[in-house]
Image 1 (cartoon, rainbow over the protein chains, first blue to last red):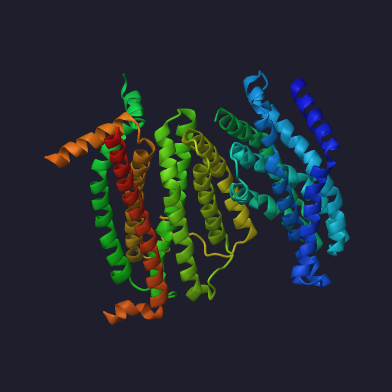
Image 2 (tube, rainbow over the protein chains, first blue to last red):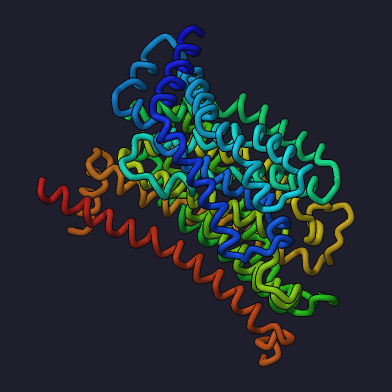
Length: 222
Length: 254
Length: 50
């Protein structure tokens, strides 16, 4: 347990010292959102209609791309191997890594998401649901994506492989996340979607670290 | 040694599996042809035309078996993944990687024929309904498994990584499927699964079941062929391949 | 016979479906045959050099 908190503390400190890396995915998120009005036209009605799905897709892509180097450094400098050999379990290592990654990349994204939502003229009442759905959804994206990253960690070039492995598993999160926002914007209650998202959240947080740990073990043994 | 342990070691041994599969292939192929010919004949000729869909419903005889098999193959792969990870049977890994392209092919056939069936029925080549969308996702998952195995050079690592991904997939597939169904319920309901009150005429059902059985044996046939080819390719430098090569040359000289 | 191939006006859709399916499955059938033959040849080369 002590190792667990130590890891989280270390990762957060490291990330704070290298703020540039964390802001990269934020910039990417903003750029993707910017592309849509340019691509499909700046009509306010059209934009507010597609805004829920659009913001969710942008957040999903930004999160996925931020994952690319999640375990690479630990793999190359031998940290991962030491963890696998030590008395601490790889599951807690995975959990700590994924959690601090969420704090570093997803939390800033959730904070700025309302700004982009406003710029796409999403109704004000839907913005709270957007934040809530992102709070439940982004950890899932990171935990599921972590499995894909762990499986491809030992590879030299894996850039196009990760999306292929990870995106199919993102679909339920996208469906319920985007639908929650959309339904609220339409004036109904999004409780059902948020409950399902919550259930998926609990399931993902509980199970994914085990898959990540066993995938890491395979990558290390190589 | 008890019987289960004996079979367990034998199935895990390529020198035993390779010739056995070779002996099985002609029989499996014969059963496949024996099921396919009456299935095709009844499906294309004797089954009466559907009163709503006319002759176009005959597409069902490839579409539905392919869709069933695309799911069946994944289920078989998931079982093999458990065997591969828990008991470390390499043959199970070979079975998964040999199955993945077959499963992807069945999913691809289901998608293409679904599209060809949809055009005259719905008036569009592609409709974003729950089943077609799920099938498309399944197709991509197959591609992912295949790509992961081929991207990792060390085949021992690749086999384990692929098995983990297969298991992650089998946990996620029901969630994905029900999410997609919830997202869009537009397609006609499942008509064949309820056998007590079949809503499909018996003359139409028999060729469908024949075709499904034929596809089942086709999967087995392709699987055995691919497993043999993959084993031979991977085990080039091992003793059992050496033995096979020398026996072959001896036979050729005779 | 012509009526059979006509498929009540759905000839294109029905025969395309069966044709593409047959083609895809044929590729699946030929691929391991070729691969097996090539692997065997490689094995023979390998052991004739040893």
